[in-house]
Image (cartoon, rainbow, N blue to C red; front, side, top):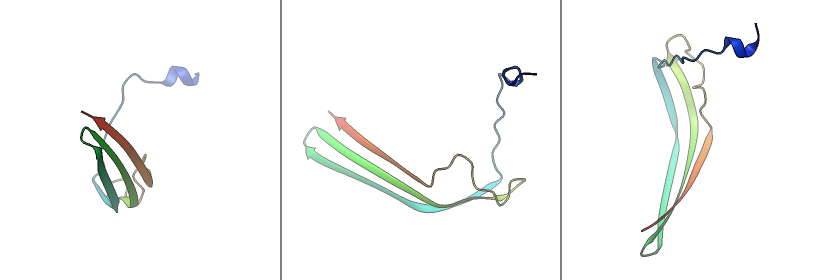
Length: 75
């Protein structure tokens, strides 16, 4: 059977029993003009481990160690 034939149109989503996370989250905003807001954020995840259930001891999937975001808003 080809790989494309095994793809299911349905997706199964499940929650882990318990997850322990720790890290730092920084957010800054500046108003250089009365109608302009600039923002930036940085997230560092030190620990993101599943602590209960069948996946106990594994890291939480699809979790980046570092992430960031810039922002701009004009009014």
